[in-house]
Every structure is written in structure tokens, then in C-alpha cells.
Length: 488
Image (cartoon, rainbow, N blue to C red; front, side):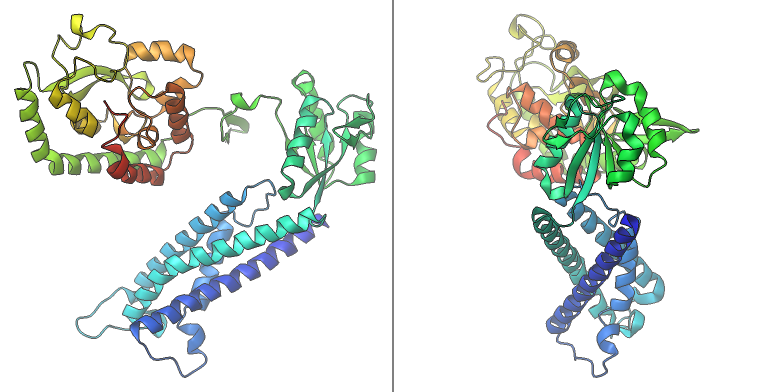
């Protein structure tokens, strides 16, 4: 019955989505007609054909289905739902453009525009698709947001609830119940507990009855028929889990396992894979690999090459200023650490009074960051640090593959030896290449600002890496990354 209700729910939601997509197509077409001063069609069939409703609606719905938008998850936050809808709509639009191009709509003749696919004027069709790229995600996002808010109100009124049981009546089971209570928007209602002991040792847990123990599991499931079961067995009884799962296999009930592990020891997302029938949980791994890693490297090569070409005249001027600021090399080299703990020589324009690679009397306390008003910094160097122009030679490090355009800033080996013991999670920074700019830097955490804050921003970047995130940071760097009061 529950599965049938879910199928009906998904079908109705798909029909509603189809209507919203059709409305978006209509809005984009009407806007195109008004902006290009086109004639309104005389035949009623053209009112459906020209907005491309019959062409766009099925493609977008298939894209949403393939990307898991219709996979029911009550515990999924609304912002993730909206993000998936926007991604699916953009993927569908790319597919639509490719199909139109393959169908001949991309051919442009000199003079009068040739008709595009389905007899629609080519120029109008391009304008319409560009408008649809803005309208479709907005319409679908607004529709899904309104739908989720409506569900919240229904669930707050006691409707559209999913009744679940929790196996495990100790600390972990109580945490699960209270967490679900706090997130009432999910519509998941804990109705009773089943003790993980053979017989119940208490009558009540977290305000719910404990109906029995594992000896009574089957009769309890037959009697109360929960929609789902949360398995919250403490570590000391973990050996029971396979046996309980085997018994639950006899029932058409969803099962979720909550591990008895403190959240601080869990990653934000845990990938599940399989090797020859053996399940593997990836607790920690490099987020930049495969196609994503190749794309990031291509972006680095392109960005570093363009950067060197664009900034070459400026770098020549800076080099001349550094040479005139005092004796010593123009480019300063220092050992830093990047991906996998590999050491490399980082390049920077010299900003200090040269003293044997910054070692010696003028560089006492070399394992500390440069302080404000540091006497070792030259006047030219102070300007270069303020404007981050001293970092420009690191474009060469990026080209050599030692660094990336975006990533956590590289540290010296002696600092890492200290921080790896003092700060839990610090070594996650070694799972990606060090970067010229990063999420911490564009948010103002640079110089001698607190290490804890910088580490939090670095870890957030690593756990949420995407190519789009890199592009966002590069864009923010143009406005926030070059000049900042914390740079010195």
C-alpha cells in the first residue's frame, strides 16, 4: 500500500512539474514575441508548437527522473532539492540545444534567418531558449519550494506523516528520536521503540513506549506495521545487527542504520562502493580525482598560461622595483608542502631584506607568520604584500603542477609537523593541491588571522569541492583576494 501511494505521489508530482515546465515554455515564448515584435500565430496548434512545449517537457522530465529528483527522501533539506531541480533543468536545456543543433537549427544563412526546428524562426528560437534558461529553473525552483512548504504545513497539522520504529532503546536510540523530533518538517513520526535486548528492560524511552525486545520483534512489526525502521544499536551490541537485518528482510519495510559514532568522526559525505561483492565505505579520500581532477588541471593550465601572458608587463615592473629595493634575489624560493605531503619550492617576489633564504639573525622565529610592521619587510615588499602582487610568480608553480589556482594555502614543513598533532583534521589539507587563492582567503582569513577559522574554511572547501566552487572563488578573488587589510 505504501509503495502504491508513493507511485501515485510521484506521478502527480510529475504531472505538476510538467505543467510548470509548459508554463515556463509559454512564458519564454510570449516574452520572445513581445521583445522581437513577432506576429501572434493564427492557428491554435501553433500556440503549442512554437513554445516548444511538446519538445521541452518530456526532455526535462526525463532529466529530472534520471538525476534522482523523484527519489523520495523525507530527510533531504529543501535547498538540496532545489539544487537538484536547477541542475536537472540545466542539463535538460543543454540536451535540448544539442538536439536542436543536430536537427539543423544551428545553421545560419546570410540575410534572412532560416527557420529552425519545428518551423520556428531561428533567431526567435535562440532568443526563446536563452530566456528559457533563466525562466525554467526559476519556475521549477519556485514550484518545488512552494510544494515543500505546503508539505511542511500538512505535516505540522498531523497529515502526510511516516510512522517509524526505532530498534535500540539506549543513548543512540534517544538521539535518533530527538533529532527526528527537532526536524518535524520531515514528517517522520517515531511511534515506538523495540529494545535491542531479548526483552524490554524499560517501559518508556524518549517519551515513546518500548513495546518489547528482539524476542517480540516479528509480532510487533505485524501488529504495528511501521513504514520504516531505524536501527540504532549501540557499539557493544553491534554483533546483533546482521541478525536483525536478516529478520527484517521478511518485511516490506524501509530500514535505515544509524552508526554509533560521534559526528565529529564522520565525514560530511560517505561514499559507498563495491568491489567483487564486498561493500566499502570511503571514510576519507581525495575529492579531486577522475574527470573532475582532469578538468581542474585543465583550468589550472589555462588560467596560469593566460595569467602569465596578461601579467607579464606588470611582473617585469615588479621585478625592477624589487631589484632596486635592496640586494638579494628578485624571486624568493621557500620549501612548502602540497598534495600528498610532497615538498616543493614556492616562488614569490622578495619582500624582505635578504638574509640567506630568510635564515639567520634577521629571520629569528622563521616558523612563525610575518607579523604586522615586521622590520624585515621592505617598503616595496609591504606594498607587494598588501596587493598580493608578490604571489604572481606562483603561476609558474601552477604550470609545473605543484600548485593549483584554487586550494588551501601551502604551509612550511616545520609548521605542518606541529599543526598535524595540535589540530585534528589538519592533514585533510594534503588531500588537494595547495592553491594561490582559497575559500579562506576570499573570506578574509589570511595573514596572522586565527588558524582555527582558516582550517574550517579549508575543510569546507575540500569537502564541498566542485569546478563551479573553484570558479566562484576565482571570481571572488578579483574583488576580495588581491587587496585585504589582513595581508601584510
